[in-house]
Image (cartoon, rainbow, N blue to C red; front, side, top):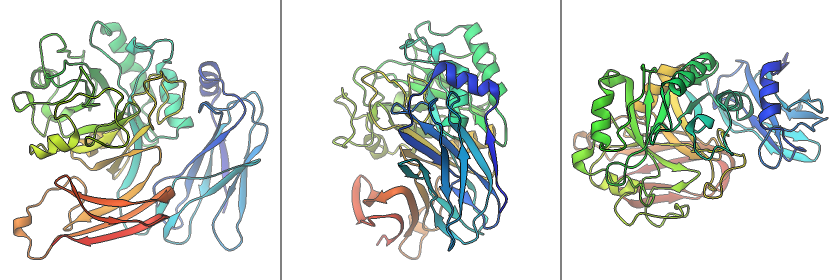
Length: 442
């Protein structure tokens, strides 16, 4: 197996060294594709990070990668002090099917990569992204935020994401046409399909009872943004957007729906429908809005029915995504965040046949996606033969619907819960980093 080490260009190294010069290495980030094929080469992307999550400028050792197999072959990637410790090694191949993690070492530091599912089956890829990153263009907590260049460089090379959205604020006078054109131009420059995708987005703030804070995701940038903060709601926002883009080129996503004062109860009269609002952001570094009493709530909680469980109970159809809502411009976590943004970082997995801006957009819009936090957990499952995002009628089934799931994570899985109509109907406790889950719902 012939491998090759690839380092960042001088420009990207300068961006990282200037905006986030990291201290001594304290953690390792090693990322491989979630879906691989036997004998097909792939990259492992590596970053040695300091205690805050910034790329280390003090790493003078080589990161060692232990490959699976009887002979436990080892490859290495050396780094030089004074240069951000970020790079990739290509040409890695797996021979056997199944779940695999790669072990990485740097001196006394030891870590595992995220898992990959190596299979000869023609499965879609699982592409990981952070749909909710703020840059200095947001004009919000500006002493913490960094530039668009840092956002996209860090997302691709440090966090090793497949795609990212710089979802900067536009409401309350935080954006104008010059900022909008800057965001569109830089986002388009960094969109590098099929290696990396930037998904056009912005945050439109609405008042509590009018839908709360929502992100707008688009297949392309229109000539300008739409803001309905003063007198509008999610329904009028969707209607005004339809004057800028066709209905299949944008959607709204409510987030931290349980936030006091900015809650997203989304009553029926302002609900724009499942095509304009197909998913909600169920988790970010603000906390989790899944159900009241969950272990990771926001610090200040709206008393009304604004959790995901409340919205589902009303019959609204939602898939789920998660992001950081980082105000330190650190995609997928880390960074010197403000004190109130202190939960685990959120991530979104999207099922696509190929990595492109449009495929990621379509994957989320059709709910072929799922939310995770901190770890890139693999979830491959079906209900009554239907994959994520699909719909079926149980009335037409002649046998009890079977729920099948393959799962794998970097660390051990404590529990898998199957929830139907807000109630856990079956649980399993694998206590292992990979698991197979099966249940017939009678």
